[in-house]
Image 1 (cartoon, rainbow, N blue to C red):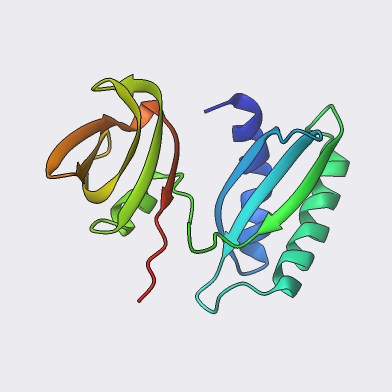
Image 2 (cartoon, rainbow, N blue to C red; image 1 turned 90 degrees about the vertical axis):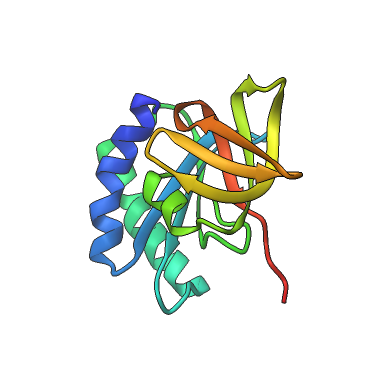
Length: 152
């Protein structure tokens, strides 16, 4: 993981958990109009706009005081949503048997995009079944992963 993202996570995770929320993960990058720091939070009761506002105030103050990010950026605090991003090993374990969409940084079997059922995760390999074929994807090479929303 990028050292800047590790530093930001180490700074923000305890503050977010002190507010009573789960720190799901973060994304930082160019969004066309400039840099965006997006922080995902969750709770058993769900996330309301007031939760995002409270977290944004706390996180914004911390980031201003610590001056972690040198350039201008926009801050966004969000719930994970229906297409929840998967950042950590525990996220993959939690959502075994769910449909996922994975984009690899390094092509696997001649492709970078995989959408299928998450069958297993052993800490290093993500096992995904797609079109009656099973793929083992290196966790270290995942660029992004999200749940595929289920509508019942």
